[in-house]
Image 1 (cartoon, rainbow, N blue to C red):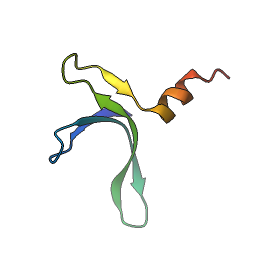
Image 2 (image 1 turned 90 degrees about the vertical axis):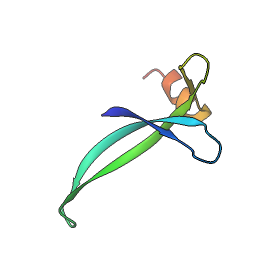
Image 3 (image 1 turned 135 degrees about the horizontal axis):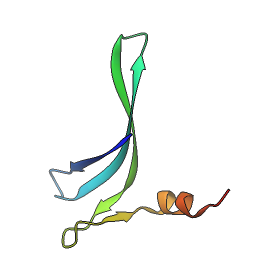
Length: 61
């Protein structure tokens, strides 16, 4: 699992995603599941979490 950065060409906003690769047995090729973490702040370079991801990180089991 790693962090992927993707920039929207229209708005210029960069988003950060958690990337998890898996093997698709049917198509015989690798695929990826990506979950949005949040926006990347232009000035500081820090990831600003989106609401659902932030709430999940606050839950203690």
